[in-house]
Image (cartoon, rainbow, N blue to C red; front, top):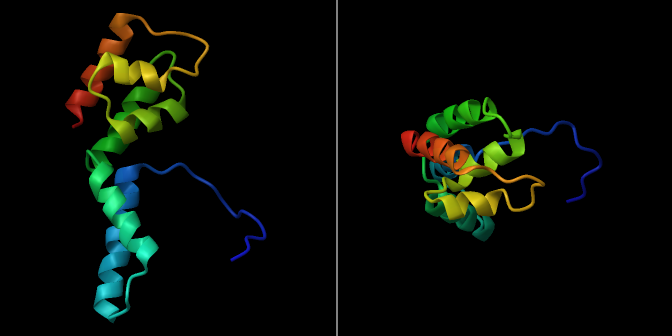
Length: 116
């Protein structure tokens, strides 16, 4: 399939992808259509890696974006990965030109823990 142009683009969280894929799976089963290998693997991947509901992940992104030194891209990455330790969080910030203080890291981890 060749794409001629991109009509629109938006960021989406892994739990939201999981929810969409589950709806597609239900539609396929209802109609008796066979699911492709790629679709089955995508659903398996999303089920395995989704650590929160789509509503709580979206709420987490909203709260994270309000913090200082937080870009939307990083907020989405944090909501998808749901880091539990400072080291995991530092790995997400590894490419940035600044480092976070221990207090800033702890504040982010507290938000993540509240939305798990």
